[in-house]
Image 1 (tube, rainbow, N blue to C red):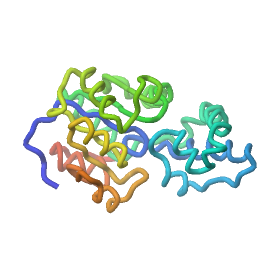
Image 2: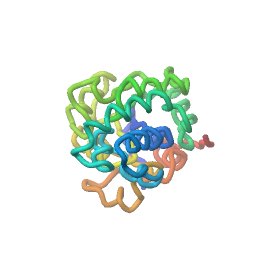
Image 3: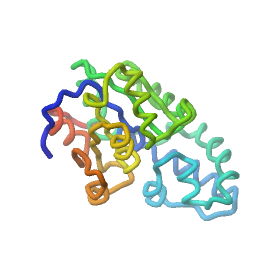
Length: 226
């Protein structure tokens, strides 16, 4: 993967699986809903493999479309109680956000997690100073991978698609980038493998095993975990 010569003035980040590991809390809330519905609990590996596209889609994959409307309020009830359990930054996230903020790169979160929950995570981690915008589900009429959402975020940041990139862990993020006219970079710290991400069409600008590797290749940064 080669570093682009075009300057990057702004970044739209996915949240879960890209900047943070919140899968433990997600699993606990899903298991709570499954238990209430008389279903066997999904394993951590199963939950991690199906997260993406918003909790409604995740629950549909796990409990079925017929049970999803009953599972959704149960999930939200439990997630509000456990949302910070097991929450950890992905390796290199803190250093990357801090260094790029210091460089004057504008940074935003663009997630299909509920907006209130996403902002609560950012506040809990003390990351507010590094982000100009945190957009999630129900903050707008749109969700990833709709290009109108990406363009809305770019407009809010005061930049343009040509100088803004998307960093995520799933095809939803790469599709968002493509639909918005952004370069899309991916990391393998979430729900999808390197092979799955490399097979995406149109091809991503780069696929990396961590934000540390991405930071070195794309931004010339030497980062240390966490």
